[in-house]
Image (cartoon, rainbow, N blue to C red; front, side, top):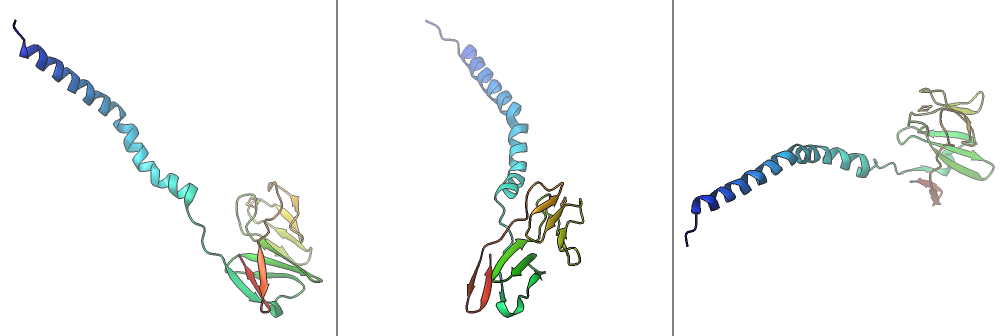
Amino acid sequence: MEVSLRGARSDLEQYLLDKRRRFLKFLPIMVAGAFSYPLYRFALFSEKPNRKTSIALKDIGEGITKITKQEYFIYKRANKITVFDAHCTHMGCIIHFDSQHKVFNCPCHKSRFSIEGVRLRGPAKRNLDTISYKIQNKTLYIG
Ligand code: FES
């Protein structure tokens, strides 16, 4: 019985060629995945900057107090305090408080919110976000 090594070698070469073709076929997908992974990870899992802050209760007057650096508004009336995130709920621009009309206005696309954070005008679709806080030793801790 005669075994042809030449035929066996051809089969092996063909197998390796097919394997290489399959690898090259998927190479662009693998490269695209490798390059897009950091963007994907950044978009979904990036940590938000630390926005924790504190303010002495004596420095919070009636009405609106703005904490500029961490971008919060504190609304105090009677004995109730609400902390608002100063980012517009539409696309995140920093809102401004109009003390004359007692509303928050967004300079980007003109959304408007009441002093209680209720959406008055879009394109924002929801009220301002409120931030949790705690009071200890006559200090308000936010975030
Ligand atoms: S970001 Fe405020 S209205 Fe668009």
